[in-house]
Image (cartoon, rainbow, N blue to C red):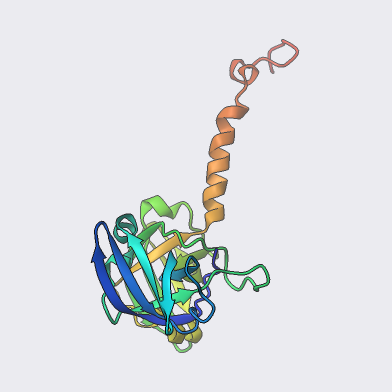
Length: 217
């Protein structure tokens, strides 16, 4: 579990093609300072398992499914990436609960620099739209952001100087693809409500009868 507060902007130093997978070598001195084999590290919002770590770099294998459903498949040597270690119970929750399970990819539609921040508009698919609300949280390339505006096809976020300087979102441009993870709480609520509705329709409610045998008014 992560918080969407990027700790370090790392760099891809090697990409090896495997059978139905790829092996990434990532430079990240901070996130590897206490990492070991089997630990998790978020790379552009995707939770990956460390298979090797040495000299400020770590290796992770990425399965074909992840390559297809996220932007990791387009990474090349030299690509910058957002890195974050898993949250600890003693860590302040600076962002929101992030699983590192990408729900979809989307393109940046527009970018407008302002005096103290950049306003970025990102496409939003119909599949994910129902999980996103104005002033709610969304993860973009592993960065926890607040949805400023929302319409039927896009959502807008504001990137403060810290985010611009410390993450890859500072250099992303219209047309670039980003990973999206919606708030997991919204998905659980949808699931629970969907499961309760059929169960609540008892025979008496369907026929209009009360529990005493008399018809409801």
